[in-house]
Length: 296
Image 1 (cartoon, rainbow, N blue to C red):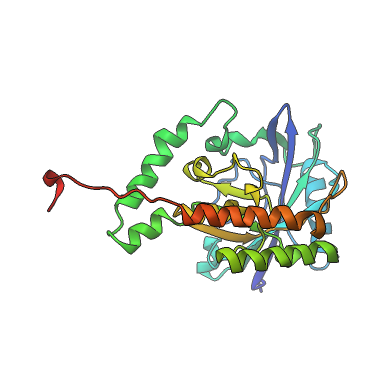
Image 2 (cartoon, rainbow, N blue to C red):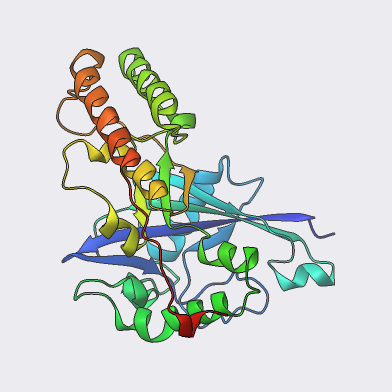
């Protein structure tokens, strides 16, 4: 009798060589989702053996060793994919596939193993991310028109607004995994309460520098002023953009020494807070006046 659930272990093994991100693939995968092409490049992958693999990570390392000949160093669990019917065979009564992905950062080197392993450029699979020579033409010629058409096909009003403003900016939030000491936690709490009282700012972790913007959001931010890095999400919202927060892992400092303290940050922080409030009070939103030929 087939098991009701199969746990798959996937390895995303990344290196940076000559300023190019590279990913390790295998060209012969014995364990694939039904309907997938077995001759296409795949990530090192294999199912968990409940009897033979003591832990998920040991199972992953065993499959990577067998398929690529590589002994992994540090690997971190990245994501779990468990949507129903990801594997089409599930509709025919097969087991549900739960895929657990791990990320490993290594130096590119020779590989072997039984999976015909090969290093490939990440941009081979994600050409729209290749900004080494400026904005990729694919974005302007293929992706942007499709997105614009998708927004334009929505019904006017709330649906169209929701499509256009799914997110103009994403702000990282380390709250759930924060490892700071008491002093930093107290300083962050004081700053958060002050921003909420003075500005009504609800962003939980403005100190997290993991941020993703639309270009027009970034170009409109007042970053020429000192201290504005603390108010980037708020200024984006002030400009009418939609900002969402997403949980991220909190990494310990690898180099240097933190200069973060309540006493030396309180004065500049309060000054900057009042400056942003002053800017908000004097913000002008242009009104567009249409001529008679445009009036209904």
